[in-house]
Length: 88
Image (cartoon, rainbow, N blue to C red; front, side, top):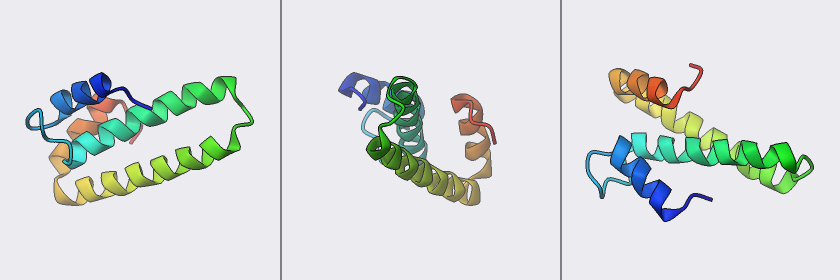
């Protein structure tokens, strides 16, 4: 789970202003950070299958948001995947 400070930092980095928590880029950045934290968790807790289901849900949600962003604004999509270091 992300701390309030980390979320605020991501909103500042990827949002249009400090209150822009709902834009697609911010949502993707927050999901990416949560996914990265869960991957670190699974290195230690291999058999945590309940959290793996949550991870898969987050990956699917991020995938949907990335597809939407790609369809609506290709330039912003390409910029975002470069910033986040996604392999697409």
